[in-house]
Length: 137
Image 1: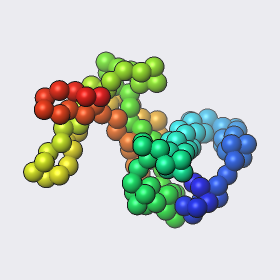
Image 2: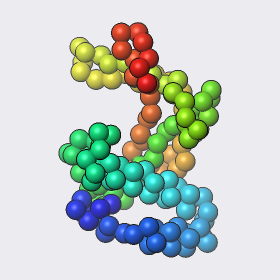
Image 3: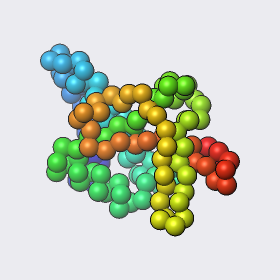
């Protein structure tokens, strides 16, 4: 977590050393923490560079404080039966349909697994947005 959001602002070298030490004791735990680092790092990079993919500042701030104060963890629930891992590209079969009457998205789909799911406080759920019956990505 960046220092400006209450974290230690650790370096890649420090993260790698931490993961290496964790892996000596439990490789599965190290994998879960690595996925958490990857997710938080990507979100932080988007936030700090003011990327169009950045979360609203208040939401990112809330996540960072939950990580710092409560040890919260986050990862993406991305793998699907037909798509597999989206690392190679592809549009998710999971759909997000906006409900204007409630001002919220309704998410409908199936995810097959998420690394560290039992330990996670937050999940990012990739979904294709549907507008007027058409999937727009």
